[in-house]
Length: 77
Image (cartoon, rainbow, N blue to C red; front, side, top):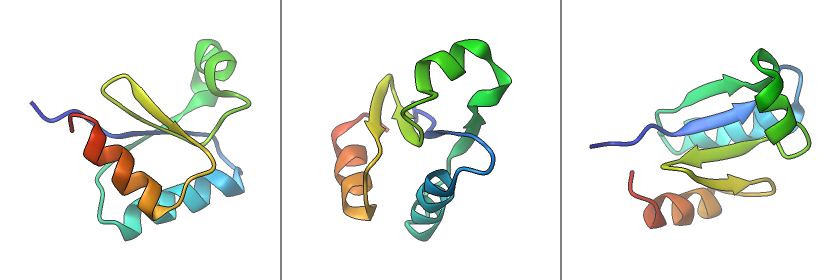
C-alpha cells in the first residue's frame, strides 16, 4: 500500500511555500495539511513547520530537495 505524503503547513508561511515548491519541482504528489485547522496540530507542529510526514516518520525544516529524496527513499512510500 502506498502511504500518502503530507506537508504540514499553514497559510502565509514563506518556508512552507518553499517546501511546497520543492516537492512540486520533484514531481511529488502530496496532501497539504493546514495545521490551523486543529488545536492539536497547532500544538504538535506550530513551531516546527514545514514538516513532511510519511508513514509516521517526519522530516522537519530545514531541508532541501536532496534531503526530501533521501527521506522518501528511507520510508515505506
